[in-house]
Image (cartoon, rainbow, N blue to C red; front, side):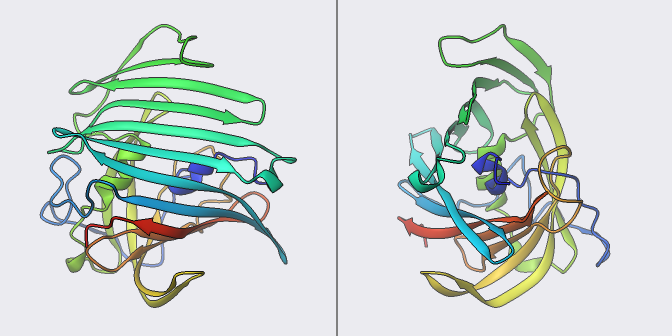
Length: 271
């Protein structure tokens, strides 16, 4: 069922996807760089709210929502994401998740990240510091119960789950061809993963319930092995085909049924 972190949908995590429908075309450095993002399609005060739902056959259940916020702190951005299940769903499974990442304003590289996870009977609090190719991680059940510091060597240009969402929005999508791949390095759960997003083409009339129809770009992400997603394929991401590059909808089959994140509302867009 839908006993899965709300953020699994939003951060494209699951099993690595080999794309067979089109030939692979790697993007050039001028189109996308995780080390030196090209632009900033967001600004102080941006807020994106997503509704998350679970479907099985004819049943469709609105399970919860996630709110993403960006604050300009001068030399850094503060990125936050707060997820919760709706009260009508909590008889089955209650979620209260909070993610926070401070990133360098020039590079969008993470400096410090917090994950505060409360899902059913499970609780985990994690603090991660990024220091030029070295990551320091502390984890416990809450902020006052952190364990020893673990030091892990990583690439100099690596993102956590929250900063990666914003880095991907900086890609120069105007020159993408079908099959183009956006490479990315992700650090999560004390491991580094090298993944990619594959451009699948456009949907010029994508319906987003409650908001209307939009021109969108369609991507198929690779996702991290060992989570709840079904098989190796199926996850799709629809991104607004404009200067803001906002994820409009994410949909994926899971082991039983499918899950979907749909943009519900937005505030303070840059464009």
